[in-house]
Length: 166
Ligand SMILES: Cc1cc2nc3c(=O)[nH]c(=O)nc-3n(C[C@H](O)[C@H](O)[C@H](O)COP(=O)(O)O)c2cc1C
Image 1: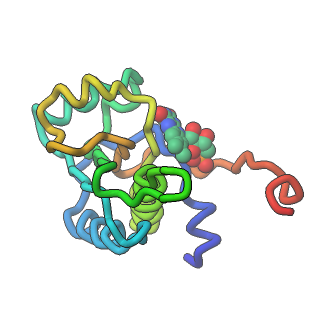
Image 2 (image 1 turned 30 degrees about the vertical axis):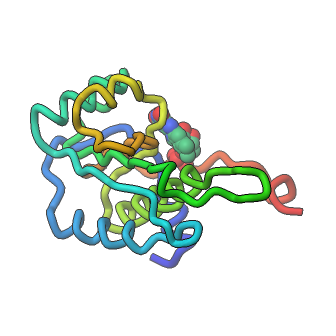
């Protein structure tokens, strides 16, 4: 796959086969995430691979959509605002930008490894913070389910080029 083909193949997967994710695929994805850039190279992030009970059920309970129930692995993408770079001119903290870049590395690497994945931000942050899984100083930013996909490639709905560029 060239990069454009990879961008086309990546889609939000909301249907998974309840089968384990091979460890070598996970290891490849972990390295691709580690290589992501961040402002002033602060790398203000941590990623938790949740693949066993009772933690998996605890995390699924923080996202009230039925499709999450069949997912074998969820990655919790954590940001650390204290570690992240803050722009002096306006005080803007860059943790969200940094975690977004690394999370998209995760999703693209997973797609290349033929694993279904999906950005999930509409989860209950307070409930997840209350599970005891989140290390001190970190805040969950995104959940990314991973697993063998059970759905087909869909055409993308996107703004036309002239509305996006120029
Ligand atoms: C920041 C962000 C948050 C998202 N949160 C959710 C979510 O909570 N639940 C969900 O099902 N999809 C979520 N999505 C997926 C988007 O709905 C999806 O990327 C968009 O509709 C485009 O479809 P595609 O990913 O299949 O190309 C999120 C995507 C992004 C980038």
